Length: 300
Image 1 (cartoon, rainbow, N blue to C red):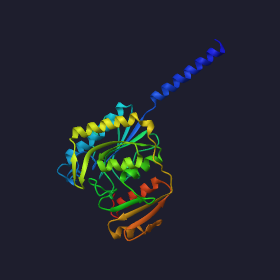
Image 2: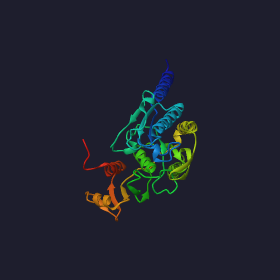
Image 3: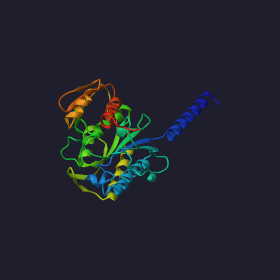
Image 4: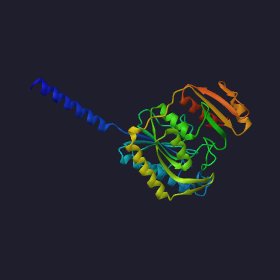
């Protein structure tokens, strides 16, 4: 065998090995699934165990997550982690998911709605999301806690849950590629990222009213958008997550702001607002989880 033939054989072998490696490399997708943006949701009657429609809407929430998984899988995605990201974070019907899907349940957890994400994921999707507490038009619009916060700011910018979570994903180098929810929620994510696939499953009329699609139509739209997002995967870039970060939490009441100001490293900005500074968005996330979860009577 001549030297040139041996070199050509080596090149072909290298190309084959690279192709095989690429074919075997998993394409991991992280799904953060909230409930207020699920098709048909308009009031608390769909959102918690005491609501007369909650059991049915757990099924719809699960079905929309499954639709996103099916759509992403059609475009080549191979592995999935799904974060149950609403309320007590025990809403998704885990027996409905296919073998191999990992589901994150329960709280507290340091990354809140994004628990389970890391740098091995190729993409993240937001399913069933709602708009920010400062949005006057969104269905069930709030940020983190509708009962607690009047505003949440990071580096002076008003935040939605989607914007905080996009920064968390960005800190791991993971782009947001798709969002579903009402028109206001999808619009906020598009404004933030510019080019994600958006599945508008309802049109906001007021805080407790919307023009909604049928569940079947919502699920079909989500599936189609998830497929489209994964086919465009190379077009998406992670959101910048460069610190330092300054968090401001504006409470609806006086006393929580006063009590939080007693923590070292936390300042009271005004009667309702506290400030906390951190080097990373993960530290900001951990602080927010403490702020909404800690009680002196926690057990066990």
